[in-house]
Image (cartoon, rainbow, N blue to C red; front, side, top):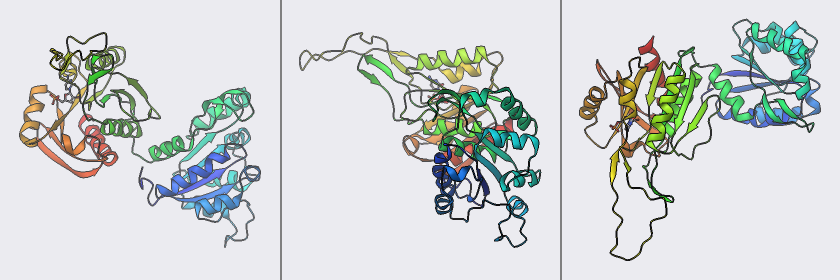
Length: 401
Ligand code: C5P
């Protein structure tokens, strides 16, 4: 997420709600991501968090009042909305949703939303009691916001400050940050469905032991995230990793190569996929004589005899389907990347293969990629995995247009 919002000016509007406490964290995160945050609060918001806190966290004077004499022309609704890259209202109360739906202008925040140029995106994060959210009047107003091109973030379901449970919880600060970052990315994969594998696989030897590899899943998760940011509908099939469940798309967790193969085939047969990206470091072999019980060391000379059987090659099988998605493979090599990458693309029969050096990527936050296609190869120089993931997604989007 580092500096993804560099140079962006975000007007962050707070309305009344307990969820204001989450906005302290969001403001810091936006600042860390490089954004210049201009906070505007309604009177109700000041009941929940103070302008002093918001000024300290954003590093900018907080605006509360339409008649603020500090603004030279005394038109804060115009000044604040003109140089904004986007406006985010979080938390957005039931009442403020009503006001936005009807174009009300009875305080600074609602007036600047109405006064914003059409080119300035408006994102709102509803936060309210479950009954207030489900109320038909609220739902009518939310539908109106969506049809007016206002992006509605969440809400989520769960425990509420009032003690009730249900829809209406505001998204968490890190989820709002992900949505804000995604909102500025070009939607090069809008309407496309992507299936992505990530992480290592784990092949059991017995109930407590197994064979795996050093893949952390970071590259695959970063690619899935970049695809989601580009507007794709993403399903991630992941081997065992320490990574948190992603926000915005579904993750199916598996252990073995066979389970990963089965999960991929179920997904492909139940949903049309436009692109398949095999990032997972799939074990080539599984233990054919895995034991149901823990294998005991009976004496120093008694060694277990493991027999290996070949796993299905997921990528090659997907590429061989009668109606195959656009297939992207990965190759982790230890040397001769150009030679092996070119050969592997032809062997797997995929239009695009991404090569990297295994020991230079497994578990690391940075990587370096070489893309092999029918025209030769292209180098994506060393960078953090999120940056490389976005570059790769842009390359894939350009190829499937
Ligand atoms: O043959 P190799 O393992 O080097 O190929 C790597 C590529 O093939 C990766 O895209 C990986 O996800 C995929 N693969 C697979 N099923 C296997 C082995 C590799 O999908 N059994």
